[in-house]
Length: 242
Ligand SMILES: Nc1ncnc2c1ncn2[C@@H]1O[C@H](COP(=O)(O)OP(=O)(O)OP(=O)(O)O)[C@@H](O)[C@H]1O
Ligand SMILES: [Mg+2]
Image (cartoon, rainbow, N blue to C red; front, side, top):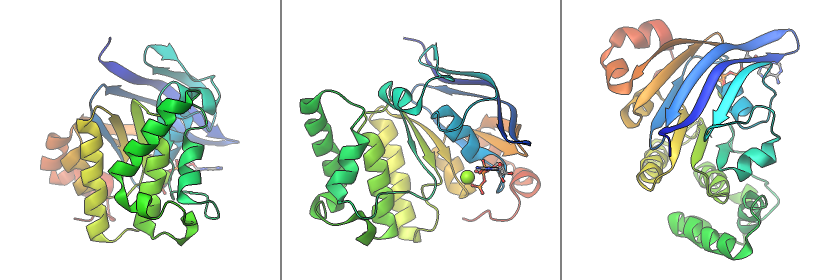
């Protein structure tokens, strides 16, 4: 089994005439937390959405577990073990917590293992078990984020893409989410984390890429980037919060 789990090679993504991502290359090894940082509009979500098969790659290669996935539909990519938690959470507000979780498992065929996975997810988030019959729209923002993560975990992913999981949450809930991410990695899930919370993201990640205007501007071990105050000023700008 190769160490390399995901390879993004010279990815280009266009929205009509707009080139949102131009020749971005990012590698993720098994067991890593890799952070993608950068200002608003840099192209971070577009990269994650392309990897998950939600927007087409205009050029480049996406290699997951040694196989090209850039032409696969999103549901086949999920089935291979790559799950995205989209920006803004996007749970189904009228559906119950448990039905939202069920939807995360629809790509899996094996019913009995699905039940087991659902129990694991509910063990991970006791609050979701307590509220399993409640409409998802009545949950707090933090609980909805947990549900969105739980839903992604229902496909038993080896790679989890998290798009701004801490956005808009109270500091104490942000702590919980970051602890959860570290815990998921300890259990063997590899993680790509897009975050505005640069300090926290650099604390928990192994390596980071700074995206600016659709290209990789800097990359390196997170500890190195953290030590560089210049990085914050020059590349991440305002919006850097402790
Ligand atoms: N559906 C779309 N149609 C047209 N342009 C888009 C679309 N989605 C994103 N863009 C543009 O592509 C560029 C990259 O956007 P993207 O959402 O990937 O950035 P981001 O780094 O995730 O930003 P943010 O931090 O605000 O979430 C921006 O210029 C954005 O306006
Ligand atoms: Mg985004």
